[in-house]
Amino acid sequence: VCVFYTLRTDCEYMLLLQRAMEELEQETVSRDEEKVKYLSEKLPPLQITGLSMDELQKLCRQLNAKIEVVDEERYDFEAKVNKNNRDIHELKLKVQDLGGKFKKPALRKVRVSADEMMRALLGSKHKGSMDLRANLKSVKKEDIKQEKVGDWRKNVEAMSGMEGRKKMFDAAGGGQ
Image (cartoon, rainbow, N blue to C red):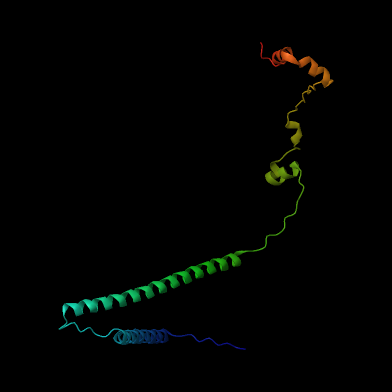
């Protein structure tokens, strides 16, 4: 299948632009005519000459009722348009989220010694081996004193009464 492209000259572009302008003008004229026609059907001309005060008030009430109906319809249409705009915005965000997602490759665990890591980071500047454990402080574990657990019966007999409580108080450091 061969596709031929023709190069348009500036003159052809000017003709296309002129044609588009004419169609735009025709559309605006037809819209204005439709608007006038619709308003003439829905809103007959007012005859207020020769009306009494009561008739004018009645006419104002009728017009006010029509205005309220139109305002309600306008509000309903605006609410629908706003809801549709929100829905469109949410759908656009979903499309962007779905389009922007990609699968992340699974990473492998690699064991690297400290020397290899330093060589990779510093390159040829790294000299010698690095023993990380040599720099650590040595900590001695303190001997934990374990309390001797004796016969509980002897302990209960010794601590019974007021003198036993005094011994506990003195042992705890309360009577210094």
